[in-house]
Length: 322
Image 1 (cartoon, helix red, strand yellow):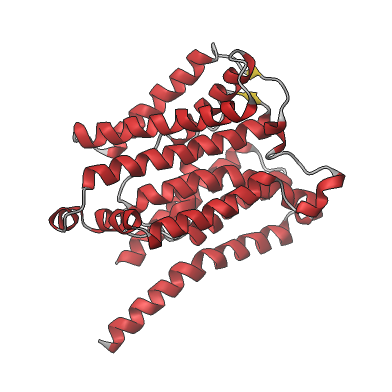
Image 2: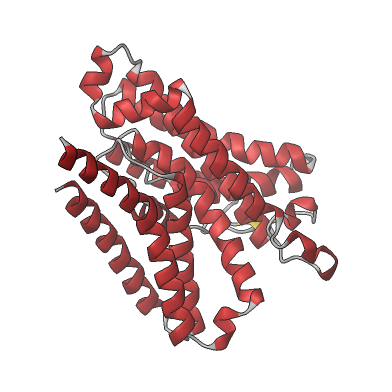
């Protein structure tokens, strides 16, 4: 019994400290091999801004993976959200707040559809969200008429823009601080609410959860709706960074998002996930991309490195369970 308890404690500490160690290790590696510009304050701010997009979407994905699911439509939802926001500003004449809420609501609606299809039709989450990846991307292109939508300049553009000299006291743009606030909120949701306990129960053993009286279908629908709402919020951050609605943006983002969760200790088998680890994993993915660019490596090398990290993360997840 004592050995089992020690093993469990060690496993928990590794799940917490492992992602942080990976983050420090990756940053130190690129700080040594990359040009001095990689260590500059400006580049650190750029890394934080880029991580806000991946990190916010990864927080929603953490909830999905904890519940034993997967969502491949995240990147398309991010693109769709940017298009909806820009369209509401340009053609709908909506105030910035309404446009932002519209983009988030559009994302949440996509997640609701995912959840209903998975629970009502009894179709696997991989197949449903793979189909939605194409459906939502097509809807984004149709709404934008296969071109970017230029929208009027509003305060939404400042959410993830580089800080002007007069606002350096903030240390990071509002979108980065939003990531921090949302991380605390998701951690509280998963660990201190009935919904969070039910999500872990469904991901650990769905049949047992049913026997314990958990409304599994309701939990799944909520899980996918919340995750897609976070993807819509990430789309708002993406719109702020690009200042346009782009139906082609965030292609492949779902891979970085899933990798961030797995690097952070989330298990693709369900029942495990760490908000702190997810944020650390998001920073790892962004630092790798930034470091490769600073070293002048071509895009195909960056893709190989990113793919290798994803495979390694999944392999480590399997080894951890063995």
